[in-house]
Length: 183
Ligand code: FES
Ligand code: FES
Image (tube, rainbow, N blue to C red):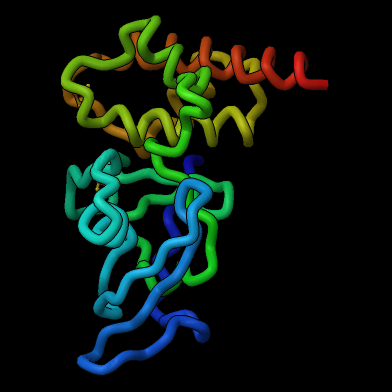
């Protein structure tokens, strides 16, 4: 079954309380140390979008169903719409903006482009972050049934999924090829 985000009601012990009920929350996002003063109820997706201006992570629902908000938290995919920012104090977060390296698209991004795995693109950041996580967890040689099962937590209202599945399969294989080349 696909991941579920970890919504943690308690503020991290190390998040720093400030006047006015705000809390200073520091973490590493896409390799950079960041901090912002937020209300304790602030969701990670709003921390990313509104405080850090990383708007590639989308909000598509209020019910933790669509997966448009998927990011990686300490290397694992989570839904940032149901994760409190304060619970991520000291964590390492990767968003869609952090996947490309040195001006080169991540193999999963390249595969979505190559296989036309998007139409409007709204679901795409979450799809790609989820897809990278699937390859990390399930291996880089993925069959269609596994991909469809693992993508249950990501909804697309445009594509009919056929091209997304092809993109995930190709992107995962390319990730495997890159790892082999690096060994
Ligand atoms: Fe997070 Fe829809 S916005 S699951
Ligand atoms: Fe439009 Fe997926 S490409 S929602």
